[in-house]
Image (tube, rainbow, N blue to C red; front, side, top):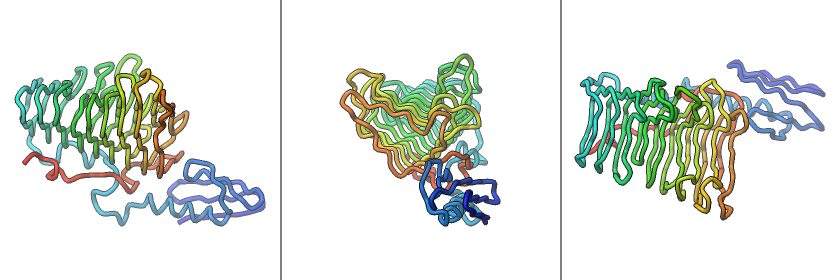
Length: 328
């Protein structure tokens, strides 16, 4: 439901659910910020655009479980019985850690290791660390909490498949280190660390290829929701698709960075940013700089907004049934 009033000077459209669009008419055209960017529209289109926004925000007829990840649909499944544990070092390939309440850090030094349906509370440098050179790691449907304890910390560090996790209390949510990875349906929020932190939701800082970041909710602060650069190596093939990217009510600089000038001649190629719901940071939606060869990311189909609608009220996300991801 919306109310529009049009005069010779001002058109005003007000939604009952507190979204307000103030627009100024000049020669029959309207400059509006409903979608977070100035767009010239006929005055008659103002209400139509507001109505569409309200439709997208209304979840009354949406199936249960739709929308982007939140605390309600990520982390350890309700009813899971957890067994207490301390720090874990995994050195046997194919190990599955399931249903654990881990007070400490998990370090993976083997291939094809799975952590699922577990709670990890770590005051160390990372919650889960996949050492370089090992592949096939999966972290699924787990709560990973850094408790705001350690500067420079990461919820997950390494490459692998990271799906359906609730990650909080670290300086950075996920740091991707070489190779290919899939990061899907995670809820990254409540980043916290002592000192002078450089907060990022997800970092990809060189060495990544064939990486998919999809259907996550990242409520970031500080520097960015997603930070991509070439400081530690080339980047080739990172797709950022259908994510909710915004702040958590605190300062956020740019919502997303893609910087090709931080690693000498390392290329940053085939980066695609599409179909995301992006809330503008203090300085803008994106900070983009080409690499040495002039490569720039493809940015298309994103919804860029100034106002904040909670992730559970936005259609989208890529929640995958846990059964589809568990080792057989």
